[in-house]
Length: 319
Image (cartoon, rainbow, N blue to C red; front, side, top):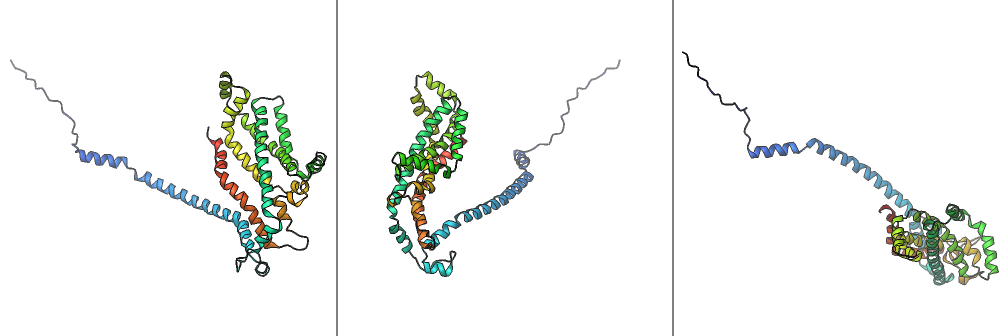
């Protein structure tokens, strides 16, 4: 009788190479680092860098072209008439000549003209912004019937040239006794500027969130409270931009103030500059000196309100 013996075989394990922690770490670093991707990324960054330098070069060139007239004005403001006649407008002055600026200051009584421009421009900016806010609140939030037609009329008023308006404006100013009066300029440009402000603010307030208005109404807020507690804080940056633009636009107005203001005591800075230009003779250094003096108040005003302007422009990008 043969006896069968069975042998139990141990399960064979596959040969797995033993790896040390150091080799595992090095393998992980080797697999995680992708030199090809890094090289491609560096190539893309270098490629974008070239485009940026090209754009920067064009921006610098455009900036130089923009400031070239101002540089010519400054150069010719401190140039004597002899230097201007001999070297032309592009030559540098041989000496610092300030008699042209002093002559303009004394001839046109420049402080008085600056005060007239500041007074009229400041009042127009303030009144036009307030009227624009009231009109836009009634049209954009009050939902006045025929609001589209009303906004179209305001837009049409901005498209009319001043030459069309000057005769009826002059006639009405004579009838009410405002001829040769600074208040006529304030009233006229308040209406003109508020037409543009109403058109702009009405489109802004037309997209105002209704949830805020409904919440204020549920709390028992009146129309006046909604205007000053809800609407005004949200559109304040836009109002700051409008006020800055209204001030600068009114400061630079020439045609209507030239017709409406006939006396020398009521004239503004642009009219004072125009008085230096004669029919047969033109003092270029004095004219450039006057232009430089006229630019300084608006430049200071822009420096003061540039943060308000930048905030108002970028306010619509964030909600």
